[in-house]
Length: 267
Image 1 (cartoon, rainbow, N blue to C red):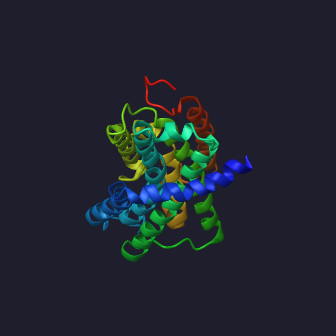
Image 2: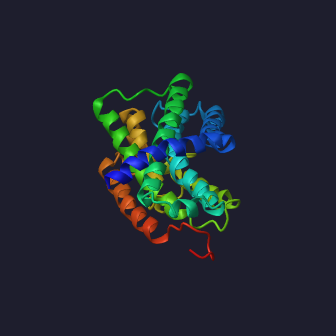
Image 3: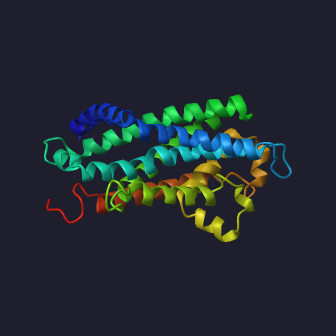
């Protein structure tokens, strides 16, 4: 296990070099949240949540910070791993003496570094242009940390598991991006969650992003914002519970379905 962790730490550097070497993919991961933030913030930014002086732009920034977890982990891995599987990278790694766990440690490390970079940019833009306040208490900073960690682990494992769905690397984005968009539209990122149809709220509550956005709103919005939540409170305990369940489920799915070689090929 120690050897796997040590080699995995080395793999983090390799994964980061590969991530930033693919400039188009790296730009997509960092630029898309920024672009959406500017568009939605400009169009709806002046509107306030009902009964509060909180603008939609502030509400939206919290949702985009949560979405950053989904972008850097689930979406990134579910698209990049099929490409590595198709070009033979995974098969070559499988044939080396390197412990297989080291490959996944490298992916997890890369995801965490990319998320830190992305969330730093989003918070800076939110503070500078959209009136977001940095967390003012140790409790909110602690919540930000544990929500980020649980969310990244859950979405990373789900991205590894979902990477088996695309039949080819070139078509991966076509079957990954729609999933991310559907979750964003139904989880309170693009719209105020309590204004969505009941069936959408029920659907979104089954998945991690709804709980990530809710917890991030606790971190970055004033206490009065919880009046706009469906339950009238932040439900942080439920956020932690749902994310923990998805970590377990994601780990099981990743172990059961991850493949080192393309479908139909001989191992």
